[in-house]
Image (cartoon, rainbow, N blue to C red; front, side, top):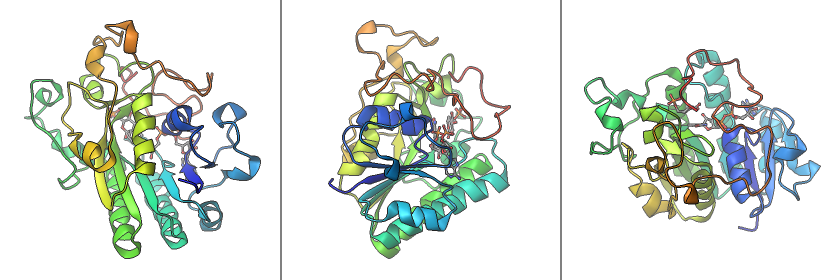
Length: 298
Ligand SMILES: NC(=O)C1=CN([C@@H]2O[C@H](COP(=O)(O)OP(=O)(O)OC[C@H]3O[C@@H](n4cnc5c(N)ncnc54)[C@H](O)[C@@H]3O)[C@@H](O)[C@H]2O)C=CC1
Ligand SMILES: O=C1O[C@H](COP(=O)(O)O)[C@@H](O)[C@H](O)[C@H]1O
């Protein structure tokens, strides 16, 4: 792709996983409401390509999407306990502003960071914990209706609907990636659910790379690694995008140690960033700390 790619929420965990993996492969515009330290910015991204703006700021967003070929939209409140006023503003209104600006600007491809929490309601008492185990064959494949288990999940389902609308009305290619649980270097420790939906950093970068290169109309796919434990199908991501994940939480012990040191996800080619932790906690959280965040999620 010759045109620049706009990455919103570039300073966060997912944004940094993408930039560390494919930061050298595209011309980027980076948008975040927090200024990005130099260590979080790939070489070659000029000051003019860095936007410190809120995604609800229509004017700033219109300026950032002008002449871009694709958008990866990550910015938002990622907390599963986020209150309604925050998800309404950051996740729903924010997605609407970014998608509308992109569609009106003629952007070709739009990747939206949806979440496992858009379908968390399928994890019913009678299905869990079996669902999280390798011998269970229950699968969600992206054709099911959203079934959020919290208001954060509701906001992600709303973003998926906005994507459907902007695809149908404007012809913009939209892919909604229901991201599982991104952690660096190892799957979430001693956390069956997290290991079933682990997304390694290198698979994350590869998946969004495919979102930028593949031809699709409107898609809902699951963003997880090739885990033996899983209840999300990877079929659609493979077929529609050409996603071919390299990692598997089964290659690690339940405590998160690599069983074989040869092929663990110890990427970090682009920069050894002291701000990016090896767990799933942002170094500088931009929302209040989540009191319910699992301590075993790292
Ligand atoms: N980390 C994970 O495992 C998962 C993440 N996701 C989704 O991926 C996206 C990124 O998540 P993370 O990187 O983990 O979150 P994060 O909190 O680490 O990063 C989010 C970034 O977006 C920026 N941001 C937040 N609200 C903004 C606004 N109104 N305007 C401009 N910038 C804003 C923040 O400053 C931050 O740099 C979110 O939409 C989240 O819901 C979905 C499922 C799993
Ligand atoms: O959407 C998200 O999901 C992941 C995984 O959820 P969890 O309930 O197993 O922790 C979460 O870590 C991330 O912060 C969130 O944005």
